[in-house]
Length: 126
Image (cartoon, rainbow, N blue to C red; front, side, top):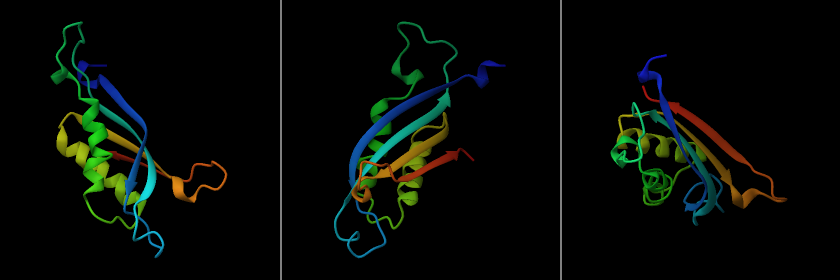
């Protein structure tokens, strides 16, 4: 295994975001609550010392932004799959070191007994 194969996975879990999404008439007028979790795989630095600067990793707030502010202002998404895709593309555009993005979205408004209903999308840099 070469140093180029070393990776770092950053995670942000359970962000609750109000997003315009849905196909039914009752869904298209008001934002829906979504619970979003992200796993972002990126190239790791050769070594992380006590004084390693943030530029050798990725700011977690970039992940949070991609799953909140970047989608809230984007308009209406017909499918939550499109929300997940938008988040992944935002992260790929932010940083060339991002290799893979995994986005899990749970639609909170359709849960009746606390179950998790939603999608998980995994995208690899092309």
